Image (tube, rainbow, N blue to C red; front, side):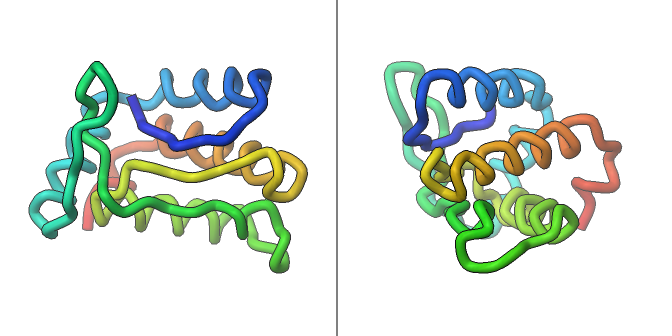
Length: 121
């Protein structure tokens, strides 16, 4: 799983959860391995003991509340977070009236379906 810290309404959570389920496990392992090599702290989370980065990506700006961010920029930001071992994202339906969640889902879907070029540095 890709771990997301969310404050969502249930219908929004279901949509994001579906994107999480489609994200390949081997890519998550590479994200964590890269982060450990860079010194990112990880913590065990929940009863399943998920490895969650101690640093997260805040997606309030993704809701265009501070100005417009292009899809390419969002994709680059998320990829950079992954490249640096960050695997926890904060989003909310209040970040641009669910825009942040929608944009995050689109980026996750694109990265999940991408080739290995997105995971090379």
